[in-house]
Image: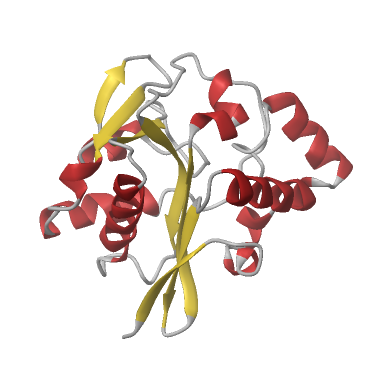
Length: 205
């Protein structure tokens, strides 16, 4: 089984799941995001966001291929590039951290260690760029697939709560710890990365 992790660009954006190619939940603030969906411009907004972040900051995602078939992805960026993060009650993300926006491994490819390799690849990338941690906003009442990952699953793969909240706690993962992950976290990571399965309706937090 040949697997590759390739930086996300406009050229391979089409390899993301259909629902994710035009989802701008994180890339726009709530009002702009809803307006883009209503106007049918969310796909263009997604492309514009990726282009701007690549030019200003650099790589902001990875796409995973197994035998040249796209099977998963992860998206991340400093919070300054993630307008939706400001809408969360537990903002802001720490200045030494990058925000994990969303991630996904398609059914049928979970349980093969792809999630671990993907997160470790991101960790190495960010460590080289001088960051110490990844932070994420979790959903403590998670019931169905959405762009906000379940807080319980984030905790299961090593994140720690740095700002509690009954609905949207902010969690943090030391990047150095991801480099020594073993198989005992793979099942939890698979559950986490399998939690994003459909594009959520945009709604106020």
